[in-house]
Image (cartoon, rainbow, N blue to C red; front, side, top):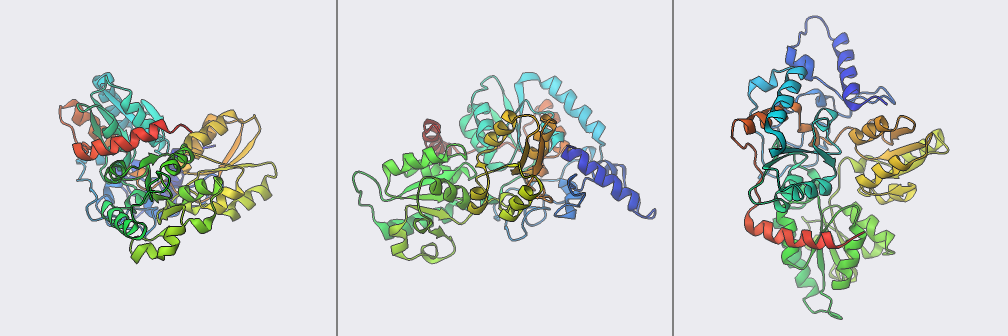
Length: 446
């Protein structure tokens, strides 16, 4: 299958061919203009503004092209400053030369960490590629590195800073690379929720178990991870969520799960917990929009958050895939809605999806419900399989897509000059409490 990079480039070329002669473009625009298109349909992206370079939208309201317009960026979220024209006007070849030269000059002192969802133009330079937890672990297990250039999003860089050494710098090439799911739960909202729960449930233990245990997904701020650490809680990943909930139920009568309702619901349902015991907590409503009795009867209280990419997948897409390919195996990420997970043949973390495809027999047909950059990269790695994304017009994670080679070149050359731009530093107190919750997570083996 053609890579996302090639698909975008082909779409850009078609767009140039159709553009009137009276609409000239600059050399930079010609090399960077990459609207998303998919080979399966030839259709344009879910948002034509994805053709814009990140620096054109970094300071605009919202999460940028491709993201849901109803997802609001918190006012305190960091914004990226202007990128020097040297980088915005450079061609792809120039950027590649600068990145390669800087990497060679910096050597092992600097490591580039790339998330699975990054664009191919970034992944090709990464020293390590993985999901958010794997990348944080890579930082923790690399004491020889002086700095990590984290090509992912903000909460991931925070976790890497918490787990890496005090003298090691973690850098996010574009500060505007946030996460709408993580931003759906703020520390103020979480603390207000906790106060309401304590008022409704009290603090009386039963059989030595607390009234409620806070659990947060890795896709959350360091402040919320720290909150869990201070209050007897824990962090989970998509691969060990069940083990974490089992850990929590050994210590508490119920769980409040931040911020992804779908991962919490799918995990709890797989454990036999009824949906009637999983009320949704809406942070802008009194008691989250629930009665005190609903909260008392709850086993898992689900925060009203979600991933904008994984929310796009539907049962109808699975039905279409099965109609077209009767022998298809459907695998999806557990951030998808419960109906999608139940209709699929398998569900699991990004690493689970990668392993499933790695182990598939030649000739297999696999439909995947996750981010498009990863799906296309997996197809490239296994040309003997037929692999396609369930949603024919899914766009890449809009905030991941803000990590562009221009930002990577700027970051590496700044490090080469002795400066440390965009360093992500979690305050000591927050880091210490977060580390408690993260260490509990590390001990909860799936």
